[in-house]
Length: 288
Length: 303
Image (spheres, rainbow over the protein chains, first blue to last red):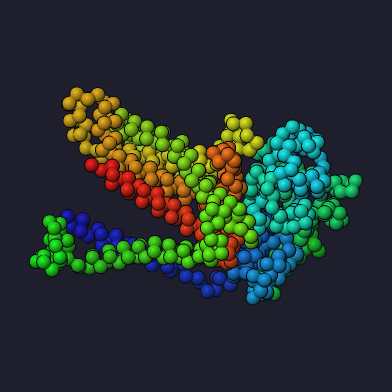
């Protein structure tokens, strides 16, 4: 009986202690905060930054870099609102974003170049769809062409994969295909988010078309050549380097104002020889 | 009877029920209760306040519009449809198994086997949504594609089936608890009156446990409506009502999956954010309506 009475009080004390600890650990510890770089945004830029972060931490003891995905739109939003110091951006800033975060004074730093390929399931590619024209891609995304046999492929309905509207890859791709980065795609059957998700869904299907950075192309997810005026341009790093591939873009880091302190050191590291080697290792073209 | 007419209004006993005095325990507990209530109130108030700009600029088309395009239109109907449809599919697929399983475990299994089944079910009920989501994306969606000859398996059906699998353990284990809480004397009396075992189960135990079973089902509905990541990975992500409307092999979008895909991009800013908060408000009202309907139903069901 006595124990039965004692226990609730002990429990209450334990609860209070727990709450106290939670509050204590949640409060930021001043000195450690300044050494942490928070990065968020594009999943296309992410491989560069996370690899760079690992090596940066070795040469800069005490520095911590936390890297989150989310997409280009999320990266800009987080930097604009002060939730992250560096945003990853696989496109340029839009006019709306510049207006929205006028006070933050957003600055972009190009760290690499990349191409967005129009990718198809390997089954479609090996069945004969090796190239597409801009008009064909447009009609597929509009839903006017619904079967692969209309573009020289097998008699199979097309699984059109679109991306979330704020994704950098989509902006660049739609800018090329429709001349409008915000274009609608009424023919879409699926919407994906990250490059991983897009890659998985295209690989799982045997009749899919999608948009993907060239660094994410693999044997199951093949980039088709773009046919333009009798010429075919393959989605390779070479055609990005010589500027012939029509859907290419800068990979940017974005900061609020000029970067300072550890943030500047980190960006300089990525722009330096070691960082630019990481850019090439990740499957993109270095800028320096 | 007015309070002043009652000579014992402030005393420990009122209407035959014992009320403890207002000691420290009273105030501490009242304080915690107020925090809990206040949190719910603030949440609702915040959602209403944040969604007002969108509701005002869109008007009724917010609820009835079929077109959602950031910067132009915000019509929530495809998402509302997707949530209702996926939840309804989940229930239709899960209830027969959950209720049949609960009756079997509670009424026919020996105590030891029952404990094993129960602990497995409770374990499954605690598995996080992302695990179900990844399994659904890797196995369920491709399987649905092959089984029904679709061009792609990510569909309302895939979301509904996955939700069904997710709520099944919860509904089953809670229904089973309700059945077990029917006193053994009821069954013994019924048996001694000459009822068969089937009659005992379906005329005595199940009707007595009905409020608890209904509660379990409504909890399942709540979980299904609110599930985000698992649905997001298999529903297809298209803001569109299929034609015909009952074509469950088409892709769709539920309210939580829409929020999951777009919230981070607009966090705290602009009409897009307001519209997303409006979606959250709609979802909250839908779950409140379900809970309310559940209460109403339970009050009727009780003798």
